[in-house]
Length: 488
Image 1 (cartoon, rainbow, N blue to C red):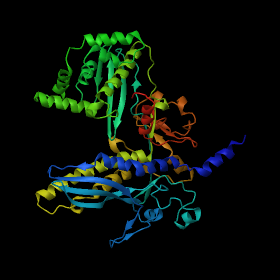
Image 2 (image 1 turned 90 degrees about the horizontal axis):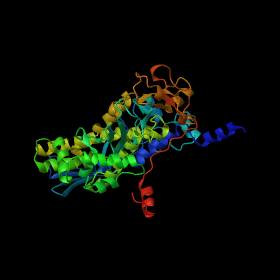
Image 3 (image 1 turned 135 degrees about the horizontal axis):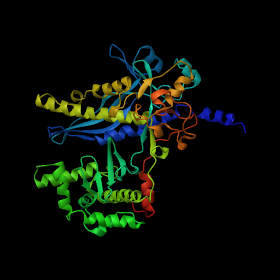
Image 4 (image 1 turned 135 degrees about the vertical axis):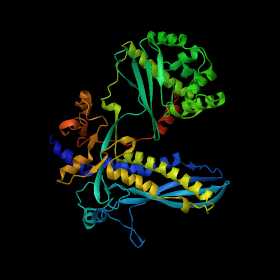
C-alpha cells in the first residue's frame, strides 16, 4: 500500500500548526470568559463602591495612527515591517455601583491581546491563496505564531505532569511510601501528599497545612467521627488496609470535629482566639485541600473519600500489592499549547488589572474626585505584562524560554519550532529515565529530533501526524453518570 497518498490527503485538510490554532481559539472563545467570571465582583477597601464585570470580547487587530485615528484592517505584514505587535483590543463590560446604586455602565477597553496568526481572530483566517498573496503573505505559511514588536515568536509547548491524577511513588530509603496529586482549580495548583511511614502511620500535607498532620486528625476535621465512618472512606479488598486503619485509629488521640479543627487552627493561626482559629482552619481545608473537588463546606465528605482512596493506595504499595506509577508514561503527562500558556499569562495579567482597579478606586475616592469607569481603568496594566512575557520568554512560575524567535533559515526550521515540546526538568541533572525514549512516545514523538548536549531528551518534537486534543468540560459527563444512578 502506498502510504504517501494517505499522508498527502491528511495534510490537504490539516496544517502543521492546527493544534496550536485550535488551542488558541478555545482560549479566546471559552477560557477568557472563565477568567473574568473568577473575578466577577471587585470590592475595594472603600466598601461603599463595587465594580461588577460582565462579558469580555476580543476584536481583530487594529492600528491607531500617530494622529489618534483608528484604522480597521491591520495585517501581519504591516506589523512585521513597522516593528509593531499584532494584537487585538480587549473590551470588558463593567458596572460601577456606589451604595448599591448603579452609577456607570459601559463596555471599556482594558488592553491588547497578541493574536495567533491564522486563528479565528486573525485577518488571514479563511483567506484564499490569492487573497493571502495580496496581503503580502506566503500561501504555504502555516501560521501558529505571534508577531511581537515586529519579530515572529513561537510559544514552545510545555510538558507537565497531569493535574488531578493520583500518583504512587516508589519506597524511599527509610521505607516510606508517598502518594500525591496535583490538585488544580483555576490559577491555583496545590500538591496534596499522603505518606505512610514504616511504622504504618499515615500523614498528610497540603498547602498551608500543619507539619506532620495525621490523616485521621484531618478526617475528623472533615466531619468523620466514628471508626465505622472512617472505615467507609477506604477502598477495601485487602486485609492489610483494615489492619492499618485500626492501627492509625488507635494511635490518633481521641477528639471530636471541633477539637480536630482547633488542632489545625493552632498551627495556621497561632495565638488567636478559638473562634478565629476554627474559622481559619475551615478556610484552609475548604480553600487549599483538594480544590479541584470543590471549595465549599458541602464538598468536605467528598474530600474525605478522595483522601481515603489515596491512603488505600499508599498502604497497598507499602505491602507490595501495588506497583508505583511511571511518571514518564505519557498517560500521566499533558501538553500545554499556546492557548493554555496564554491562559496562564492572561490570568496573571488580569489579576494584576483587578488589583490596580481597586487601587485606582481607593485613590479617586480618597482625593474626592469624580468616580467613573474611564478614570479608574488603566489598559497598560494588562498589555505591558503580556507583551513583556512574550518578548522575553519569562512566563508565570519562573518558567523561562517559553517564547522564542521563529527560525526562518529554511522552510523546515519553523516547522520544528512550532512542534517542539519542552520538559520543565532541570537540564543540568542526569535524569536518565526522563531523557530516555519511552514506549508511549511511539507515534507521538520523533525519536531522533532532539538536541545534543544538556537538553538531550528534555526537548522533543511531536511526530508529523501527532494531534493534541483541547480541554473538554466534565459537566456533561458527570450529568450523564448521575442520570444513570452513579454516585459521585
